[in-house]
Every structure is written in structure tokens, then in C-alpha cells.
Image 1: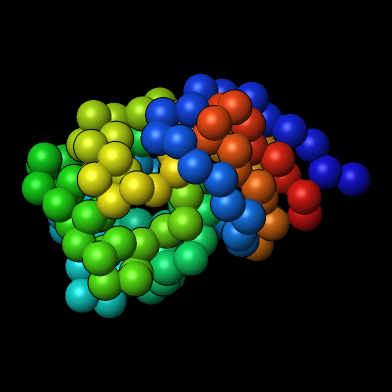
Image 2: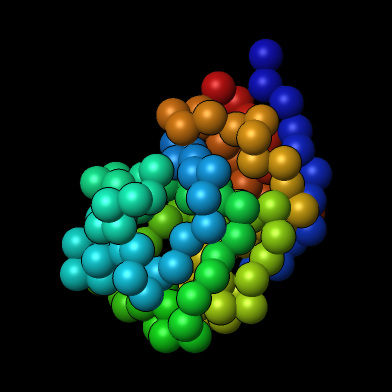
Length: 132
């Protein structure tokens, strides 16, 4: 019943986890509380959601380069997403994912993924399999 979405592997790795999907860009500096891993930007569609252990799917990142270090800090505290799936990779998110060793794929139509879907990310091959 599932399907595969093909993209480009950015940071190698594999995981299976529940998807958390946003239609909005994310800035890890300002939108996310680095002490809790919660989205704290009140205008964001993921407001109040926890990133920990999810496959975080969003169009692209934005904001300060400090966001890379916030993502790294989340990983060191065990609060980071298990993988990141983007429509278009942003250098700030890529650097953070590399530092935090978080599998990352871009070039994926995230509108085909829904929050709560179980997804398998294979960033070695650039494939996101939606299991549902």
C-alpha cells in the first residue's frame, strides 16, 4: 500500500520513523527550543510539536547559520529528528545535519507525506518510502 519518493541523499544514513510534516520553512534558531526540541514559533504550523525521533519533512530551512549549531545541540541532547526530508536543501540545515549525523534527503515532494505516516528514509540511495 506504500510508495517510494525519489530524491537526492545529502547526509548518509537510514531510519524508519513517524513523519512530522510542515508546509512552512523552519529556522532552528527561533522556531525551535533547543532545550526541549519543541517548535515554539506561534505562527508555525508545527507549533507545540516535538521533533524528537520524527522524520521531519519541510520545504527548506531559513535563517541564521547558528541554526546549524542548534540542530547539533538537539542531537547531543537526544532531542533531534531521526531524519530530515526537504524539497530543497538549505546550507544551514545541511551543515547541522552533517554535524549531528542526521540522515537527510532533498528533492522530495513532501506534499505526498502526511504527519503520522511511517516512513523509511534511505539517504544512501536518496529514497523515502512511505509505508503508512
